[in-house]
Amino acid sequence: MARTPEIVIVDPDLSVRADLTRMLTAGQFTVVGDSDYGIDAATVAKEHSPDVFLINLEEPVARAFQTIEMLAAAAPQAAIIVYSSQSDAGSVRRAMVAGARDYLVKPLKPEDVARAIYGILEQEERKRLHLVDGADQQVARGTILTIFGAKGGIGKTTIATNLATALVRITNANVVLVDMDTRFGDVAIMMDIAVENSIADIGRRIDELDRESIKDELVRHHSGVAILPAPLHPNEWRDLTPQHIEKIIDLLAQGHDYIIIDTPGTFNEIIATTLELANIIMLVTSMDLASIKDTALALEMLRGANVSEDKVKLTINHSTSANSLREEDVERVLEYPVTWRIPHDYHVVNSNQLGIPIVIAKPYARVSRAITDIVHALSGAPRERKGFLERFLGRTG
Ligand SMILES: Nc1ncnc2c1ncn2[C@@H]1O[C@H](COP(=O)(O)OP(=O)(O)OP(=O)(O)O)[C@@H](O)[C@H]1O
Ligand SMILES: [Mg+2]
Image 1 (cartoon, protein in one colour):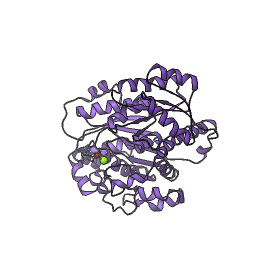
Image 2 (cartoon, rainbow, N blue to C red):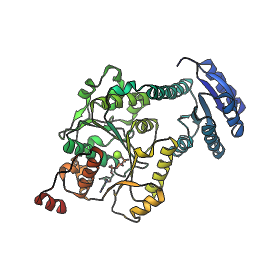
Image 3 (cartoon, helix red, strand yellow):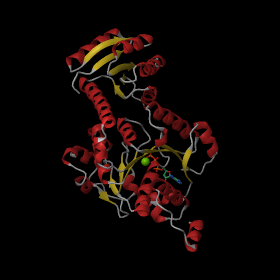
Image 4 (tube, protein in one colour):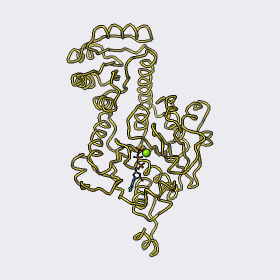
């Protein structure tokens, strides 16, 4: 980027605005304006058309959110970066829904602000180049499928491990399963593999790797699925930036037909990157009210981030046998169609504990058949006609 990025600061506290202006202009930025919340901010936005808004988010937050929405409408070309003393997932999510592209927790450090601004502007630049000439597209890339959900314990890892396994079995494709659970990755346990080389190790050496050599870093499961496990200790995620994640996924996508990404039930900038890169987002919900409520928020967030609805496939997983809601009610409440349904199956818990994906342990169980259906829908692979014995086993599996 040739010229220095132009910033507008929005903060009700004049002295904070002055401090921030000093900090930014001492670095490599130009502050072209500043303002309080409200209509003033929209006016400054129109006057200056900045590249970036830096906006404070504090209690009471309603006015701040209203201002973020106003800025997103008044200057859609500008990126909005929120800074706040609140670091809870709810505030981050609401800011993203309102139109923020990044979220920094106070106290602000110049290097964090600079990294956020340049990170976003580089993304914009890449998008623009992609639109101008599809140069990058000359290298083919596989389908990136992110398994996402607004809550923990709803079956995301169960689906990710089984989907990856079934994809290899049915289509014989090159499939890599990436554990992006930034808290406690479970993929290694559910696939019963040893973690020698994790995503954190690969992130550290990403600049030395290419689309072929990265394959040697993956664990090969006996099913044929290649696995990139999460680090054993969650602290190791600290070394990984969204830029690392983007590079890792891009290299994997150059050498695999499918990249299946498992995520935690929380939201952070690494997960935001996996959603941005995904060709398909499987949004998993279980049938309990808390999960439906959180799924409504997740859908709102994805809409706020301008994720195309074609990409988002709502999937009901009956991870518990409780069934207080009907599937039609879920569609009505969420105002969103359900693409895939996975039934409850008591075999799942056992096979997860044994570290054998259920599609291997019980290929004809109800869950395995549901996963198989998803694989056919994703890949377009033709279905084999079942013989009498298989149909019989299918009924009893
Ligand atoms: N369709 C199903 N039928 C029966 N049990 C299921 C089903 N799906 C998931 N489970 C069970 O639900 C529990 C949670 O599953 P899983 O660990 O896959 O969820 P998760 O969304 O990845 O959770 P986390 O966010 O904590 O990583 C496990 O005990 C699993 O065996
Ligand atoms: Mg999980």
